[in-house]
Amino acid sequence: MIGWHNIAGNTPVVDWQTDGDNVVGFGRGGRAFIVLNNSSKAARVTYKTSLPAGLYCDVYKNSTCTSKIRVGVDGRFTTTVPAGSAVAFHV
Image (cartoon, rainbow, N blue to C red; front, side):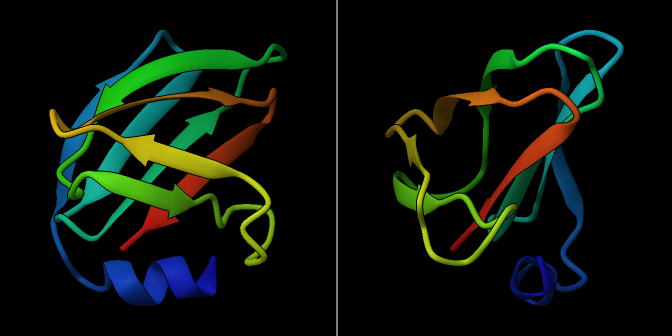
């Protein structure tokens, strides 16, 4: 997550979205995005991001790219966020 923080830098918060009281997602400029799930169940979400279309590594748990997020040309992505966890990716 240090790499995510460094890439996000001081870019503004954008694309704020929520899927109920316990799931929130937001971007940092067109450089990074994170989804936080504070519920006791996994959450399947579709959110819009300002990141370019492409395949991104989920860097929340580790930096070895064991999980990937695909952002479409419309800026949308769908992912499942485990209970009490997060998904984070960046350019």
